[in-house]
Amino acid sequence: MPAEPLPADQVTVPADPGPFGFVPSRTALLLIDMQRDFVEPGGFGESLGNDVSLLAAVIPPLRKVLAATRAAGMTVLHTREGHRGDLSDCPPAKLNRGTPTMRIGDLGPKGRILIRGEYGHDIVDELAPLPGEVVIDKPGKGAFYATDLQELLEIVGITSLIVTGVTTEVCVHTTVREANDRGYECLVLADCVGSYFPEFQQAGLAMIAAQGGIFGWVAPSVAYLDALSAVSPAAVGAATGPERS
Image 1 (cartoon, rainbow, N blue to C red):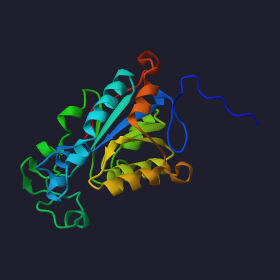
Image 2 (image 1 turned 30 degrees about the vertical axis):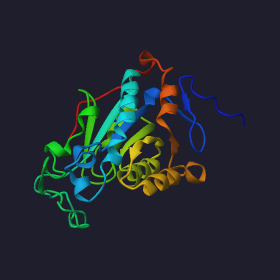
Image 3 (image 1 turned 45 degrees about the vertical axis):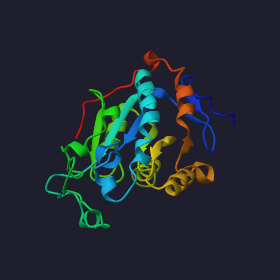
Image 4 (image 1 turned 90 degrees about the horizontal axis):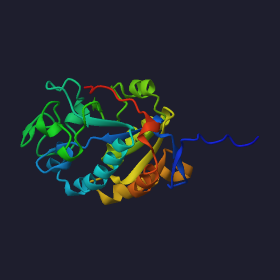
């Protein structure tokens, strides 16, 4: 049987383990948890004893990716991990894990740690959502758990995700695995995801592309940007919705 022809508007990105093809009008850029509490000094990430500069390094390449994706007229989605003020959606196993200097809900330099509506819970200024870009507030590590993300993707007609954000081995990995189980094809941009642990960054990316792309594809952001440069916004016509929380 002859191979099925590729869609005329498909874009191809050189990636590991092989070329990643996507249709821009059916693809969304997903920015996972680029929040002050994780990325900036004085937040939850630093309270765990981590070097937040390793995550802040993701911001410059991600700004370029975000600008180019917006210019192409594609769908952009943001997530924020956090909880209600009464912590009713934060299980004890998460609240009591480890020995941080500040726990979820404690008052820190940027407000109560990982509490919705607090300054630290929000997305860093450099990557702030524009009006019309959806923000998914999630209580867990994966972007699909206890959110309406899948419903939103189905409404907009999204079949592929360009995945960015933090941290690689936790919220990024969990979301990519959830997406894979739901039939979405994911391209993870290697320099637009970050970990507090360099060894986890390397292993996490390798695990995604292993065994012929068991969870998805991995590529540097420059490869995505090169492919996107030929995309016409008029041909995309991506739909966006109101901010959700």
